[in-house]
Image (cartoon, rainbow, N blue to C red; front, side):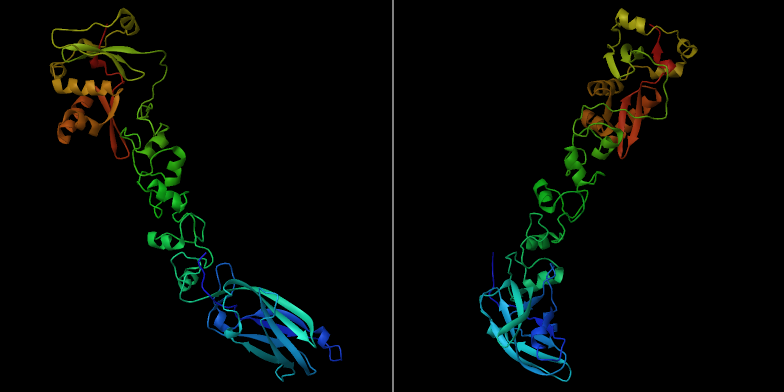
Length: 403
């Protein structure tokens, strides 16, 4: 521990006795210890602080009759009396003051000092009182935390401890970081300030990456508090927590209710959807494509088991497809490409990933996806600031063929 030389601080002892006979002296007591105005500073632990170079006073209170020969002695963490002054009890104002100069104290007294005030009469100790005080130099850092003693008293940090709040950071370092040296978790996010520096988060900001989860919560979940989308799946960590998916795995299942209630569905539903001159097999309950369309003139037939599972009568819409709808079924390589990307991504993908995968402009991707949504091939759902594209599992009659 760094130290600065000094002496014990100022103190005031209130002493009194109650009777006026020859035994009055033996009844005198030290009632309490107070300090002069020059010792107005206190540490964050409540100990009076005396700056080196200041004087102090002890005050004796008494009742008549007059007596003489009393001594007020001061001790400071030693077995020997440091200084004694003789006082007479008999001042008309019922008070007398004794001033002890700092030069009367050992120069090696510094830091926390147990200051004892003792009242004696005729060589006999009548009473005493002990108070912890702190002796410091105004220019210096007693605890070695790079902050001046005067600075620490002003911010209520400890002049005796380099790390007031015990958060792993010295008080001087906390001032550099704009954190609170008296609060182990300056931003109240559940992580100590030093731990935030280890993680690379901001100890003055609850949610460093702005994803809606506090840094402490992300530490509990195992997500990255400096990355909005820890697993890179297009959904922010907070969104994944809200919808019950795993924010640390891009392969966790994702289900969102979009206002459509499906009841009475049992088993796996298969359908064969006409697309781009061919057929692809669709499994509705988990958004997976079982087979993709062949190019024009080459169709891949579903298995008998798949056909049996999808035997449903064609609707009137299916039987009488209008020329406009038929035109929409024309071969479209761009649309086929998007569907393949979706299938390879498990049936769902963020819209910006489509841009990355195709190298198309964002506006072109938006137009293509809107058209595919109009044709009933996909659905788009907005989650937070993200657009999620999903293969459509709703029953669009014109898109299904009877098999």
